[in-house]
Image (cartoon, rainbow, N blue to C red; front, side, top):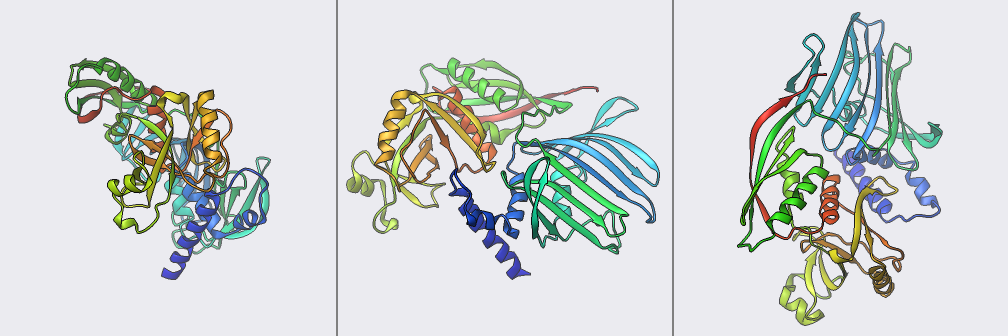
Length: 445
């Protein structure tokens, strides 16, 4: 079993690296062969967690057992941990309507008798991702052939299903199949049924990364307090305005600047949780620099800022790809800063991975084209507040006024960078001191 897990992990690493290096153009024979591997099927499931949203339909039934079971649900999933589900569940002929909104570890269930929302601990049975993970947990994916789902090409895989809640005695001969989109590499349908047709489970997934909003019916009011790092001589008014815009863009409701001084900001907002992690991300200054880079020569353990400047020039700096424990980079010429931006947007690339797209001025585009044309085969580093967030290899001269930041670790990171670039850098460097819960607002349906 251990060797099998290691083999699967190795295959996943290989396919992620190969897909990450792909470019637009004709699909190679190797690409086609990779889409027939078990690693490709497993990676499609992992990619679901990194989609900003999707919709789903789920139907299941068991007939002829101790009791008949039937269910039909549809709903939406919104990154990072929100879902909205409605439908019915029938157990031994007793039908129960269900409408549930889940956010993190809390669940809000609509009570039709009182017509109010009841807050309770979240149930794994409602989460579409956990349902899917449990069903395919035994794995053993095997490529069957090509197919079409909704008019689009998809690869069809068989797998060993796990449906203990429909087959608790594990006495049925169950057959599992999963369809993976050839274009996006995402699962679009998973189906399980028994030879005697008495057990059936089917989930369809669609509308990936489409505009979607899930409103939590029970929201709490919070007050976030920020303090300036060091002494300030102004700029807090503009800082408060820009920070308020960023908080609204990441989905917080009722954002309002309550008070400000030369050293402190207080902002009120409504949310289902204090959202401290994402608030810390978007309250960073947001200073952008895009720099040519290269790999260091000689032993990396001897590198220091002094050695880098004496070896590569006074303008050179020492950087790291993703944190101080990763591969070092020598940061060279600065090509772009916030002053070169005309706008920024959040989106996904052709492989459904989160990106930030920047529109730059014509002068900056010309400068970037000339610099990248003589830097092919070397890295180009994207830095936020002096830290490298992406360092792709330059494959050719840049062209046009749009520049993409790829290779970001998560949707959360991508959205926070988008928010910072879209508003521009904060004039004052802030630290989040506290988030205080003020009260609760509950809605009826």
